[in-house]
Length: 301
Picture 1 (tube, rainbow, N blue to C red):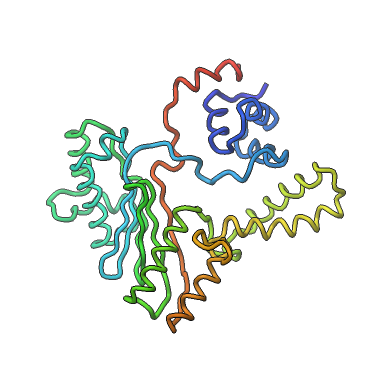
Picture 2: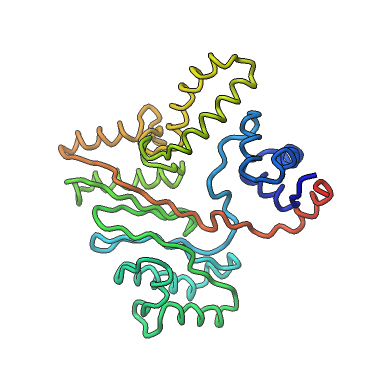
């Protein structure tokens, strides 16, 4: 029997929403390979595309802010939700964000070596002090910094942080600001993976086509028919994962591209969505669930 653990079954279930026995069987068939097991479940038509990073499974805070054309989204993790609401912890996360805005570090290592904003300690030393005073493991996990015409949105008190970069001549107009916030909220709600179809990596597209083809074949269609059906399904795939092709959540008669063009026309200017980032607290970090693991342990022995 393939080697995998109760936690592997749990993680596969979290990533796909499929029942435990189906997850166990898929892992067995895939010889314990998580990504292959996801493909198997999708080919059988019992799982949708798994999110790249899995479900949220850690505490902490995401901060997103813009100052003078410079923006940042940063995630800092803690062990408990209680600490994430601690005013000292919140102040520390905001100081880290301000440091990134002001000093433009290229990565986490460089950030930790910088003097923290409005302080006289390095970010690393300030982090160590917070660990000692708060009594929990605290980690600065990731950040993204951008410059230009930016809009940010924070959902759920720091659960999700979004930043969008635009190319536009409509900065400062209240109608554009409202539009920009709506786009940021779209990203928070629908979680696109790419800006447009051109940004989908070739290997991702080919793998998706393989999975869709197998789904069609499993439904009883011959190979020559399956290829044509897959091409139609790929358009649906784009509408799910590409921001510009998604339906606008506030008006599903419009795509995001159509909504953007409509706003630009009404305001007499131009708007182009250049890039976006969406950071979800604890994304891809598995939260401990010992009782659940015990519940399914016997299934994978």
